Amino acid sequence: MTAFVQLQLVERAAPQEARRPSVRALTAEVAARRPDLPGVTAFARRTALRPAT
Image (cartoon, rainbow, N blue to C red; front, top):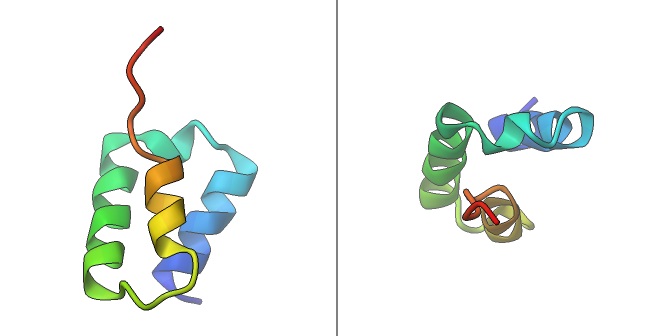
C-alpha cells in the first residue's frame, strides 16, 4: 500500500488527524516526490492548516 493511499485512509477515518503537522509534512513530501499521483494536490489542499475562525 502506498503512503498516499494510507494518508487517504487516515483522512476518511479521522479527518482531524490528517491535519496534524507530522501528517501534513508527509503529505507535502509525497506531493513533492509524486505530483503525478491523481488527487495528491487536492488532498494536500484539503488537509492544509486552516486559520482558526
